[in-house]
Length: 167
Image 1: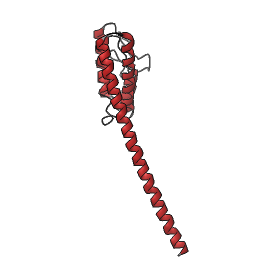
Image 2: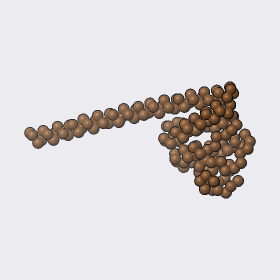
Image 3: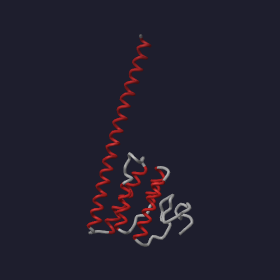
Image 4: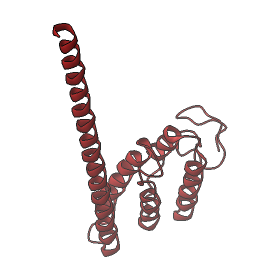
């Protein structure tokens, strides 16, 4: 194993860079891929902030083994919760899940397990995107409400000022 990550220059331990998520050790078997994904998710859970988690999610490997790839995607779906994570983590997880679904379609065409996995991932992505749209809509309504109140206040101040000056 290398002493430094070739992608970012950080000191490394194990198979995954704990700063950028890049593979730094040899991964030649499905077992090694599974260990790398496990290590990646430990690093994600230990990340100090949202930006660090997102960097690890984005830089993490996409395994070649179907079952390990499905496991990686299922682990990423746990990071879609905007109530527990701020913007960057869920959106990095979203992109990772989209990449896994695409890779599954390419690696395992006609594989029923892979297709069920893709269908489940697409369902979770749709649910996440609908939740984000609802949050944005609620945020837009709140902004509109604040704007209406501000305009009303400004109108009241202008009217009061006009009354003082003319009255």
